[in-house]
Each structure stands twice: as C-alpha cells, then as structure tokens.
Image (cartoon, rainbow, N blue to C red; front, top):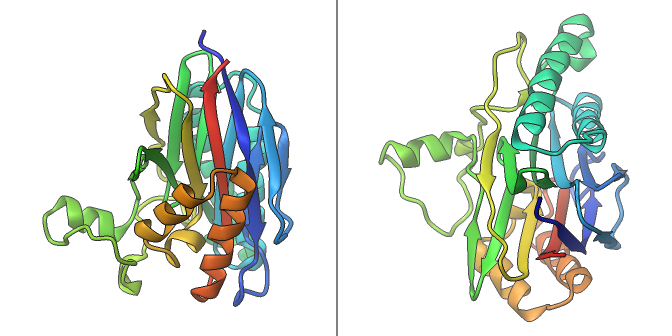
Length: 258
C-alpha cells in the first residue's frame, strides 16, 4: 500500500448573495458546514483519508441537509477505495430520495461532491455532479474530474466548444446528482486514478468558485501563492469580487508520498 500525506487549507463560505450556506467540506475526520472567511489548515498523515467538498441542492434546508449527509458519510468511511466511496454515495442517493418522498420540505434534496481519496488501492479523485478537482501540472491547470452537466453532454456531442469562460446559465442543469430526484435512480460515481511521483498540488471546489472565476484566474493565483492558506484566501477574495453569487467552498492541498 502506498502512503500519502496531505497538507493544505480549506474554506467554506455563504458568498455575497445567498442567505444560507448549503455547502460542506471534509478533511480526514474533520468536517464543517459553517460559513467562515478564514482558511482552515489541513494536515493528514498516511491514509486512509478523504478530502472533499459537497454542494447542496433543493432549497436551503434540503440542500444543507444533503451536503451535510454526504460529508458525514464520507467521514465515516474506514476503508477508502473507489468501490467503497461509490457504494457509500449510491446508498446515500437512495436515502436522500426516500427522505424527499416522506417530507415535502426535503423534496428533490440532493448534492454534488468532488474529492480525493487515499486508501488501500492508492490515490484517486472522484465526483458526482459539477463540483470539481483540478491538478496543477507545471504552469497548467488541468481539470481531473468530469462534470455531470448539460454543458458537458453538449461538448461530448460536438454541439458546444469547451472554452475558458463561464458556463451560460441555461447549461448549469445537472444530469446527475446524489439524490435530487422524486424517485431514486442509480448513479455513477466517476473515479479518476491519480499518480503522485512528485508532490502534487490540487484544487477541490464547488461551482460557487468555478462560476465566478475562469481557469486562467485560478491558475494565476495558484502560481502566485505557494502557501495553501494564502492561495485559498486569494481565490475566495477573487470569487467574492466577481459577485459571490453562490456558496463558495474550496480546498487547496499538496499531496506527497510519505
């Protein structure tokens, strides 16, 4: 089993416009749903561990409850593998749909998630929905995960060209989430194996960041700020200056073999 350490920082914030925070974040056994404008340090030794962000959908109470449950379920994962993460999210998908059927206040509650897991089968990124994981490759920022969105489907069909601008509003619709439906349907957790021969820098974030900043903006900050807490603060401040129209949750982490 290969062991990896992770150092970095996270931040979870309501943003400028929303009245409540429906995002949540996780680093190892520490989770948070509390809005704060100060980065929280991350320091985890060799695995198993998960660092993840979740973005709730379906109204304030429902969305906040969904993202909290996603992060809580991942925090309890003892054997971190692609199969175990996929199984946890699949079971939670069914649970959230059942809650929506039983209580109208939770109707269509759901969440997206993106993260990095370290366990017995190595290091991997995962996602459901349009929260993302990026890797800094030299002076290039590469999106590791694949969005479950109308925009991504149109790109796959050759009907839309990928560019570095923000998504048009009508393309924000999700094609898959954890929950978010009246009746449960099977979901696919996207798994992306990672190779870390040298220390690697990653950005994990909800669309509250990526809808405010284009990749070139995020890359500029990550190159200019070698310290994770400073990078998190700078990314957050730019997203707020750009409008901060959604909850903003992000983590910048350095992963290395231990």
